[in-house]
Length: 385
Ligand SMILES: *Cc1c(COP(=O)(O)O)cnc(C)c1O
Image (tube, rainbow, N blue to C red; front, top):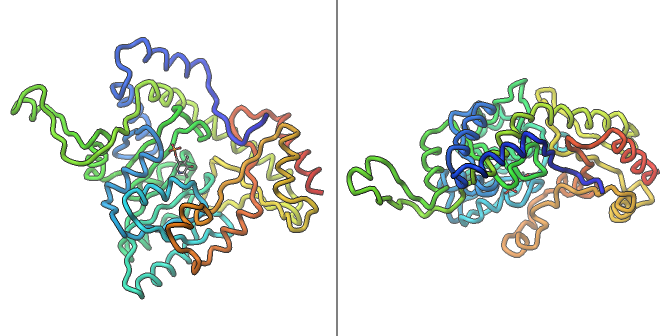
């Protein structure tokens, strides 16, 4: 069965993990520090902290920005649920803004309109959680301009876009957003099994995040000297969001391979782009001129309304052929929990909803063979006649 994403593990990964297993340090320790150093160099951040999931990173990010009950946070509904859940953990109210019909990231004109609309009824936006969707970068100069003009924080949920570039700059994310988060789940470009990270150029945010990661506890030499070697202080209500050295060892050896992983993804995307050229049926992902796309996802839009086949049957037929497609994402405001607890009936999110109706995620990952790509194209085209 060909899935939409899959990890690639080689000998170097196995040896890297083995080394930690043979050492006497398994939990957060020297290897975590090494991974953090490598990661922050790769993304050009002053500070990077790794945690045990991307969701943990998002949660801690919201805590560092002091998101609290009834604060408004803005996001697009076309992202993974945990991107927005992370603010709901703290009692925030989600406000959704539609996606841009071309690049599928949040629509920046609609974002500004929404901020003004909220202002007119006396409400202020605390933060925007912005997903650089599928590996496509949002127009961060505009976002920065808006965040300065209307005074809200920005979190770049960069889970899809590690290694993407904005105006040729791979280190764009921390330059524009207050906090940048990543996930190292096996479907992402590099993996640690489970894992995530939080990066920032802001020392205050970094030092808060570090405390929230470990139960809100501070332990250091000064405290030990003053009170004794057993002493530590719990200053905040924190969590155990630590990554183990075992996972970090995998992260280090995976990060060594990220460039070849991305090049392969781009090669596959290129092949799909050329293959699905019938504009009456297919719409391939659009790439803005400023963007170097890392193709965490390859969302293909299929005009099911003009076809004899519907999405459900299409999925079934492809699965029979050994091709397991996915859909990214079910709009978050369609989710039961969100419907039950919030009211989105007055929000127009038609672009997101139409996108959801037509989109399928094609398999794209390092280990995908040329032969498999041909098969995928052939079968999809056959069922979309
Ligand atoms: C994967 C992902 C997450 C969650 O990451 P986990 O490591 O699975 O917790 C959050 N947001 C987006 C956009 C993601 O793709």
